[in-house]
Amino acid sequence: HSITQDGPSSVKAEFTMTGTQTQPLTPIFPMGKRFQWLCSAQFDFDSVGKIHRRSISFNFDPASSLDMRANLEGLSQCSLALASTPNGSRLLQLAMEANGVSDSV
Image 1 (tube, one colour):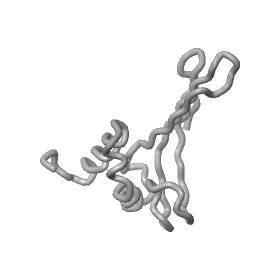
Image 2 (cartoon, rainbow, N blue to C red):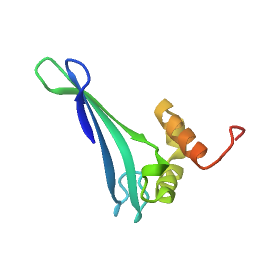
Image 3 (cartoon, rainbow, N blue to C red):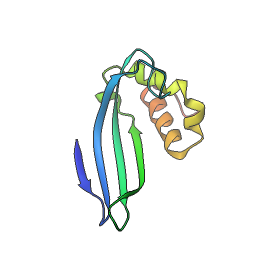
């Protein structure tokens, strides 16, 4: 876990998100199953110090997951939406590689 300055008006935080989703709020988290994701957040500030842009990325790392099956279930629930973005596509690719799925799929 870390927070670093990433430029004169930008901060990057790396952290672990862990929990169990009990209500359907975010498709990437499976319902009723414990999950763990490594995350990165980027915050950019304007000239008066207010956040004007933020982004959060989920990083697939099977070695750090409490239960990789729960993370994979969450990915499968929203795979079409993830596949439509560059970061989501990369996340799906990493998950497939970690599970031995060949490049021919």
